Length: 93
Image (cartoon, rainbow, N blue to C red; front, side):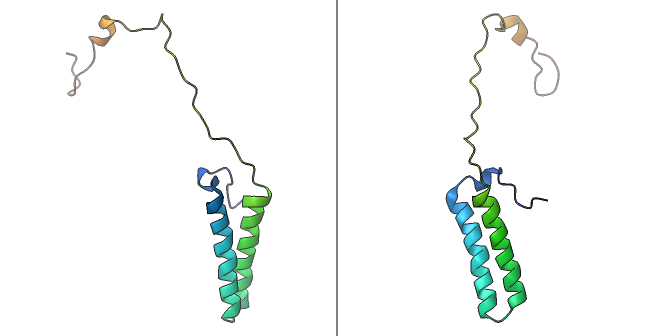
């Protein structure tokens, strides 16, 4: 079961991935310093898991570009096809 989807567009930027891992490990340090090792282990585990998913197994994907569609000369609509457009109230003009 994967908790983080590394293919989500939010994780494309490096600073986002670094910030997530740093916050998790930082919170683990805070918990250990304040004397609560249970929550420190949980936050450290979240940091380790996020590091594994967002850095170790992360595969950078190129940005998705849509192909340029050029209209065919045969499919051009003439004035007859545009004359039957419905108006705002749903009736043909």
